[in-house]
Image (cartoon, rainbow, N blue to C red; front, top):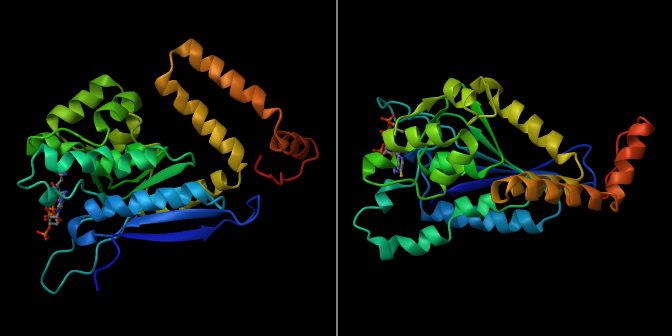
Length: 278
Ligand code: COA
């Protein structure tokens, strides 16, 4: 039987409120092909995005790649990967009419458009569509052996999952241009330096570090988290002064929520807040 290209596990978060909070961990599961994203991966990610959006218990999403399988005797182990890009075998012989519908409704936008927080846990290669998937997440935690890159130029292509745009906004025009036109990979140290990775830890620590961060986020008010994400995102779309006004109106509106009163009282009474989520 063919294995699932995306393995999904919902992990309960102790101390979350409203009770029953979950972290949804999505593992790209094609390790023999370095977790490259084929059409099925996209369909599965889009389906999970719909589920995550409609399930109030899911408070945070973590996306990761499966570890390499044990190699057959005499063969070399394949390298660790988050995702080594789109599945290049699916590009062969296709023309623009063939690929347009797929690219118009893709997993990178579905992840980007989630109202809930998302973390990419990057261990090994994140190339092409893999870097783009990490860019579609809100936060990128990388291991020391992570490598990022946009090598599409070497295939006679450019990034097609929002990479040119999201890279410019995250790491700036100069570095984005360098990555896209040289196709060269960056190691984790450089990724951290330019802000592509939020944090770099050892491979052994990566899972615990990422899950601790996800739990921390999952224990906040799910309503306030959505407002926070929406407000930071507004900076990408709006002129500065309009963005400041948008933030102010979101901030002021929070004074009508129960969770603001719960958070403030919990602080004053030195208790843990028990959020109601509105
Ligand atoms: N699409 C489809 N298959 C891919 C792939 C991709 N993006 N990236 C790797 N693979 C497959 C290889 O074909 C190989 O399959 P096989 O063992 O059945 O022949 C397997 O994954 C292992 O890759 P391999 O190239 O042998 O590993 P490596 O350690 O020598 O090199 C990379 C690792 C990441 C440098 C190399 O695989 C690579 O450059 N991949 C393509 C990256 C890319 O251009 N991504 C952008 C796509 S738009």
